[in-house]
Image (cartoon, rainbow, N blue to C red; front, side):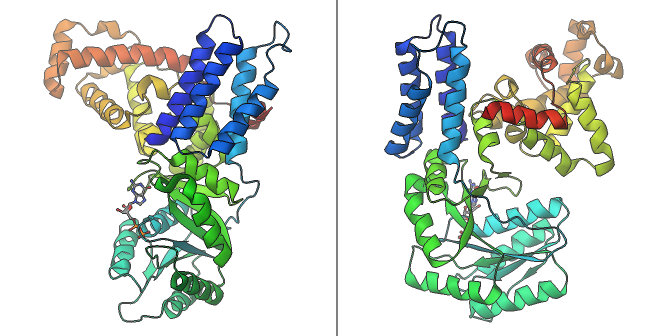
Amino acid sequence: MVLAQLGGSITRALQQMSNATVIDEKVLNDCLNEINRALLQSDVRFELVRDMRTNIKKIVNLQDLAAGHNKRKIIQQAVFNELCKMLDPGKSSFVPKKGKTSVVMFVGLQGSGKTTTCTKYAHYYQKKGWKPALVCADTFRAGAFDQLKQNATKAKIPFYGSYMESDPVKVAVEGVERFKEENRDLIIVDTSGRHKQEAALFEEMRQVSEATKPDLVIFVMDSSIGQAAFDQAQAFKQSVAVGAVIITKMDGHAKGGGSLSAVAATKSPVIFIGTGEHMDEFEVFEVKPFVSRLLGMGDWSGFVDKIHDIVPMDKQPELLQKLSEGFTLRTLRIMYEQFQNMLSMGPLSQVFSMLPGFSSELMPKGQEKESQAKVKRYMTIMDSMTNEELDSSNPKLINEPRMMRIARGSGRLVREVLDMMEEYKRLAKVMKRLKIPKKGDMSALSRNMNA
Ligand code: GDP
């Protein structure tokens, strides 16, 4: 994932600075140069990068910092705060309320990922207990209705559209009316995308909006346009009351940082980002947790939110309590179960990136696919172990002949079994240090980061 590369470069720059024996002007400049380079490569506007550097240098006046001040911490905090400032539009968006009908209209250019994102958005809320429905008001592109129908069917979401009707306003109104009657509480209207910002597209958007009176208009854009996102977002905002933005394809483009900061500059809140073609490759976007994850500092609130998504209500307090006591990998079976939990929480890269210190251990940035395969391989190997081996607090009990049997049984190499055992020891050490903060502590945590 390309954003991970940006995060990786910034984290490396901070790490290199931390490794220096003394933090002087040169070390600080080197660190800031690296961060600037990474941001510019991500297509963040030059002026923003320059201002960020000036601000950090103002805050971190090395000469004025008395000995004893933790310079590293102050610099890291300043970088964190400046990145947050860069991505914060200073405005929040309308949030649909469960049980109360909301109409949400999606707009954007063709190919931006609008139709895919409509279903991802509906699926996200459906998992949280909403009753969404999809309306295809794209009568311009042949095949648009079929695509929405296919996606909606896969996600088991009711849909409405027409093969015969060519008036998008009529289809939109009919669909919204139908789903209001059916007491659907989140009615999502997908509109036509065109190749470029053309007058006819904007006029159609205005008409659909007037007729359906959406509570929220979401503008969907492709991250590959980088800082050009500013002009595109402004153009859409001028034609229709855009209340939120979703940026797609954050997985594939080097310009993710540029598009995020450019949208923030238009004062439109980014609410989600698309990180892949799959329905679950969709993440809530909130500035502080995002920057925190980007810098490898973890995102406990996102992690806990994920747990709320997938764990049955009555099991949540128990699991959260367990997690708050720390992940002690006392046995291989516990590791197996943790892997299982995490795999069910969505793409592993998303889950691991929420755990401070953990992502870099098992999930090196930029190698998510390999790491996911590795976790599954470990699980296959553990499938060939005996209960006694899985429950032992002393895995040394697994001797060479047993290793060979396990390797044969799982169709893997002995070397891979050894690797798994090594990784287990390493993870057990890392996870011992991890503790999920309790709910109250979590806000303290974000306050600290913000301080
Ligand atoms: P529309 O014309 O704006 O409705 O765009 P579509 O929803 O048809 O999407 C265009 C292409 O982008 C499809 O191949 C989608 O699978 C793909 N796509 C959408 N969102 C993402 C994303 O977040 N990541 C990646 N890699 N592909 C995406």
